[in-house]
Length: 258
Image (tube, rainbow, N blue to C red; front, side, top):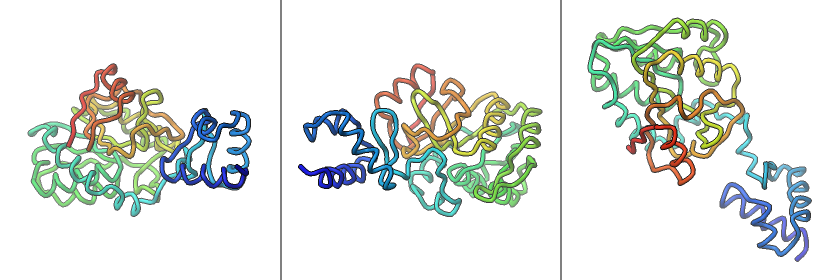
């Protein structure tokens, strides 16, 4: 088989599976691993893929890649809606403090809190302008907005001021989002400033609930902001794979399927 044909088949497999391994390709094409590595290097130079340890992933899996707020709202919206609906049952009944992290799934939660009046009697703390604008419409919620420099991509505050304000809180429960959820790497996000805010947010709550659809499973983005042990509950739309499920169990994380 000519190298050009092999390259075409590698790209096709990437489009189907999202990743390939050196060992898998060496066996498939009956070639040496060194030849596979040369193939992957060539394809990376042409921007068809990105090499990682043991193989390659699509260019859309870059650790710093982050979709716009509008795009993220539309992606996996049905799963996010189910997760948000299930998360309502985890809200304290009344007279409690709740932190809501920036993110599209947490925005779905805020909308359902408003629609069902589930926020009655709660103190809700957030640094996300889209979430604040939703909950500001509720006459029964006490809303506290954490300040800082607003990041246009997410509509959320970030920076030293935001981190400092969260460090002065100790809320009853926090609902957080993530860009990546990985058995070994933990929870991660592409932006270092956002990671610092999330780290402070997690530390400021007595109980942490992660809202994440299955597209976040086994993903590693640039900056880790929490280990799995920092989470108390994961609300998601499907059962994680074996490796992630085992890691969550070892970290004593309750998994709730919406």
